[in-house]
Amino acid sequence: LTNYGDSLSGWWLLWKRLNPFASVVKIPNQTQIQERLAFCSHYKNLAEMKENQRYEYIQPPVGHFSSAKFDCFKEIYDVGYHHGSTFFCGLRKAGETKKGSRRAGAWLPTADR
Image 1 (cartoon, one colour):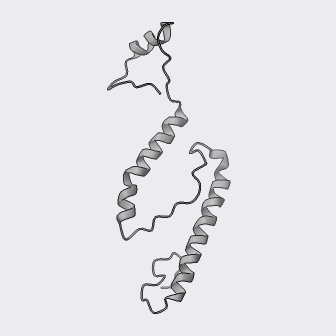
Image 2: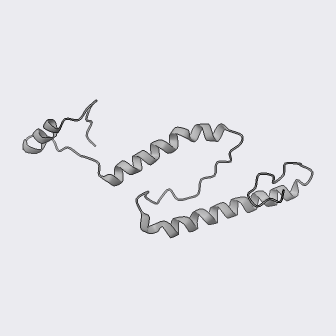
Image 3: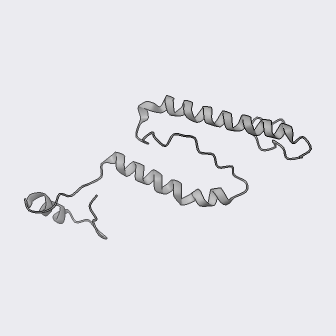
């Protein structure tokens, strides 16, 4: 993509478009902008979440899907649901082996309290 500097001028863009000797200006489309915003907002808080003991950060294997693939919602949902259910089932089984621990399985969403 083109480095626009600190600001973007409409006149500069018009000059680049009309001048046959100027380099081509690559402007991101809506999908690219959406993906970058999602990436920035995710990684802004990621380090804090991973360090916080109250959160368990799990990442389902959905990285190969684009954030604009709304027609793949069911497939993305199924992949995430399978990953989450497998993860929490493993935690539940690990908690059953640690029956002596008072907090074993206490934060699981399906745990009996």
